[in-house]
Image (cartoon, rainbow, N blue to C red):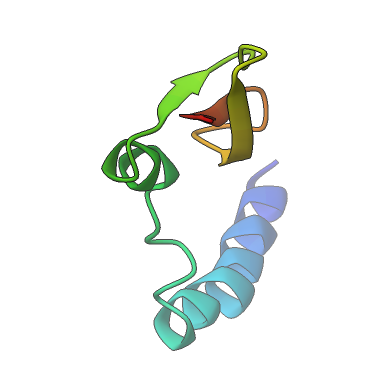
Length: 67
């Protein structure tokens, strides 16, 4: 079990950390904040009079804008 943990930490250090240092802007976008900033609301379903433009926090919630 310890050997699995060692390889997991090694794999994490080799793949994820360099990518985070090289491309910091990909993980830093807060879609919920951007939705509210654009006068939208994060909901599970958009009403008929609303337009879905993006996902908010997770793929189940949508950013809904008034038409």
